Length: 110
Length: 113
Image (cartoon, rainbow over all chains, first blue to last red; front, top):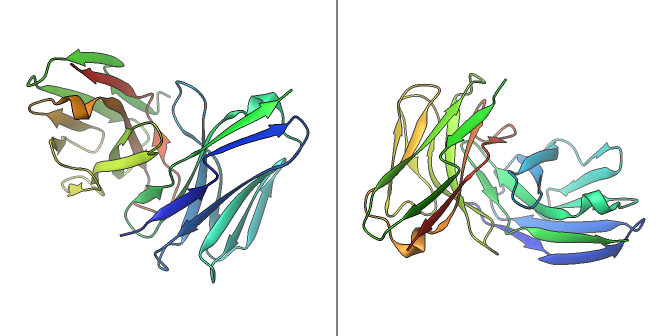
């Protein structure tokens, strides 16, 4: 089955700086790569996703890049704000289910 | 529009007790999922139902059973709870299996003592 590895497990940045979280996947058949944000005590919520026929996607301050050849994808957050502090999960899927990475605790320091 | 509704939100069980976690979605989604979340381990799939009438094991199915009661409802049962099942459980649904975003319920925090 699919295996998704996520790094780093914790990340602290100064407010206004950029944050980058990286994931690798194992199944070359995976074609859908979402990112979820989970605030403390809340449910995971989809923030951005990318499909395998696209190399990059942006939505305001967040962007995701995908390198199918290397089987890795990354989340980029620019101009970080305190409200960006949360746990972020990457995921990968082929046909039937999502496999999640282990999560990154992002802390934005004021 | 409620989305995905899970009950209960909190539960404490004694070892050996049984319970059923309920999940219902009102988005006409075909696929439904049960995940558990433990510190440092992300979200691990317990069971899923790709469509009404089908269920399949995920990564960590031992100690659990599921029922896809109809298109809206997907329940998770612990027959004989163990302390290792202390976790936060999330139900999720999606239009189809892997090709679209999941919508999660608000979670059930289960403690087994």
